[in-house]
Length: 179
Image (cartoon, rainbow, N blue to C red; front, side, top):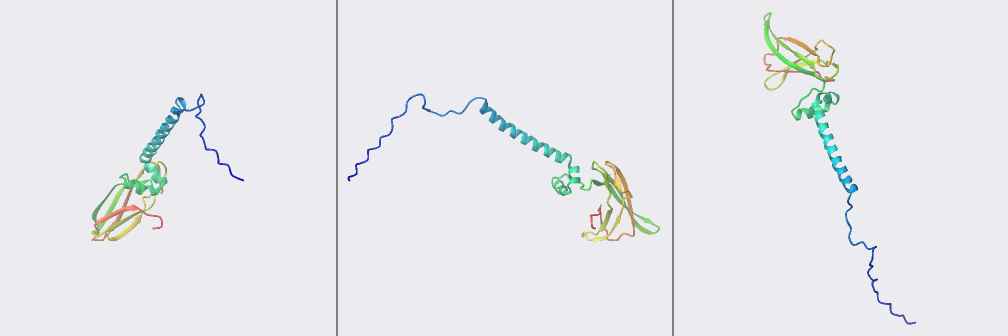
C-alpha cells in the first residue's frame, strides 16, 4: 500500500481577545514594599547586634577575660590588656638597702581585684635576671590573703637577703598552675 504524504504543518492562528497577556508587570502595592522593608530592617538589626556585641566585648573585657581566659591575648593584641585572673599588680616598686651589713632587696606593691566578684589570690613569683635575660634567682611568696572581694586592694611586700650581684631585671607575676 502506498503511503500518503503527510499534510504540511500550519501554525495555529494567533489568539486575540481578553485572555492574552501582552506584558508582565512587577507587582505594586503593599506586598512589594513590605518585602524590601523587611530585608532593610533585617540588615539594620544585624548591624546593630554586631555593634552592641563589639561594644560589650570592649566595655566588659575584664569580665570576658575572667570567664574565658583565652581572650586575654586577643585583648592584648588590640592594645587593651586584661588580667585573666581578675587580679592585677599595681604600683610595684623595689629598693635595695643595707641591713646588718647585708644587701637586701625589698619589693612592694598592691594587688587589685578588677573583676566583679570575689577571687582567690594565687601565690606570687618574683624572679631576678641578668642583662641577657637569664634568670639568676626566683622565689615564691603570698600576699597574706586567700581571697579578695570585688574592687578590693591588698598590699604585698617581700624581701630577699643577698640578691645575686648580676641581677638587673625584676619580674613579678602570679604563679601558674602546676609551676
